[in-house]
Amino acid sequence: MAKGRYIGPFATPAALSHRGRPCFPYPPERLNSDIIRLPGQASGIEEAPCGRQRMGEKLMRTLVTGGAGFIGSHTVDLLIAREHEVVVVDDLSTGRRENVHPEAVLVEMDIADPELATLFHSDRFDAVVHLAAQPSVPRSIQEPLIDGRVNILGTINLLECCRHSGVGRFVFASSAAVYGDPERVPIPETAATRPLSPYGLTKLTAESYLRLYHDLFGLETVALRYANIYGPRQDALGEAGVVCLFVTQILNGEQPLIHGDGLQTRDFVYVEDIARANLLALGPDTPAGVYNAGGGTASTIIELFDLISDGRAPRVHADPRPGDIRDSVLKVSMARRALGWQVTIPLADGLQRTWEHFSPVG
Ligand SMILES: NC(=O)c1ccc[n+]([C@@H]2O[C@H](COP(=O)([O-])OP(=O)(O)OC[C@H]3O[C@@H](n4cnc5c(N)ncnc54)[C@H](O)[C@@H]3O)[C@@H](O)[C@H]2O)c1
Image (cartoon, rainbow, N blue to C red; front, side, top):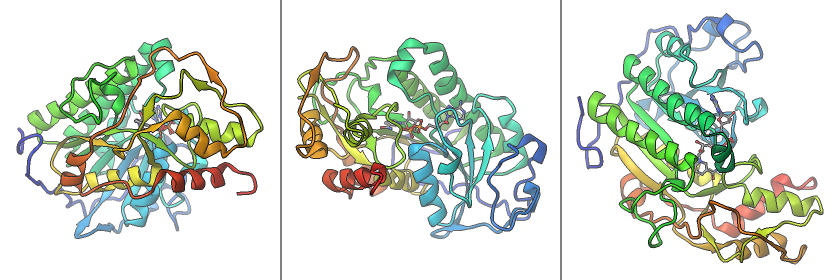
């Protein structure tokens, strides 16, 4: 049963009273043998320290799917800095073991695996941040079945686990791709949704499941429609790999290609800002619903290229890519009001940090 309106000024504290339970009694044989262990945990996950940690007045034990990936690993870093206990579920398909914070526990598992229920029943999570996905738009067009299996069935599997184990709050990484080519920019949350790819459609479908699980079962669900996220640890093959691609190509002495006229606009957000949006969405005062998470500022691809290349490479244009959205800039006033969130890191600063991360001398 729903606890309140889907988007509205209600706040339902997550069920947080799990003290006295074994901290992580998931059978060790089901865990990846190279699992990253909590400090002081010599062998066997049961030995993990059971003290709950705090976010403000709340004690939080948080499951992060995709926590070995780009955005997920920054989110885990921030949650641990804010004293959450973090368990990461990741199949390492695009993520990396070395990205996972040493104080997080990594369970190497597919989110669509029915065995996920065992993890939820043997441990207790207060909240889930769901970032694991098939994240590539081109791959979703080539292999829509794989995209649908991970992004839809994997999400339903997680929601079912939450429903049956009493998880209070569920934060989901959705995407501006749900809008397709917008009629106007900046795009408000109420704009029409006409995804141009299976990826955008699976994100939109997952959002609908979140709303249903809120209305039917009272799960506090928050979907954040990310703009184009960039920063350290990004993989150039990802959804918004253009920053990473330009940076790494210029560093390697390769010529980046600007697809089309380069006047298409994007809304770039530094990864630490989006990690903070995820953290704020976990707060019990954030109303369930769907929020844009962007910078609200349009940058053309040419502007981006010039900022990154700084004269080190000429502008070279190639054919436009099929399915590419012309303009994508998000209206962010709702997230500002409901989450108290806005970007803090200007594009030039974020690009400098990204350049330094990828630079061998940086
Ligand atoms: N990067 C962006 O600009 C952007 C924009 C909009 C939305 N998003 C969304 O944010 C989330 C994180 O994206 P990212 O850029 O960090 O990508 P990423 O590829 O770095 O992270 C995805 C993680 O999910 C894991 N994963 C994939 N399939 C899995 C499965 N079946 N089971 C368990 N783990 C699985 C991967 O190993 C990886 O660690 C995704 O949901 C993506 O769709 C990203």
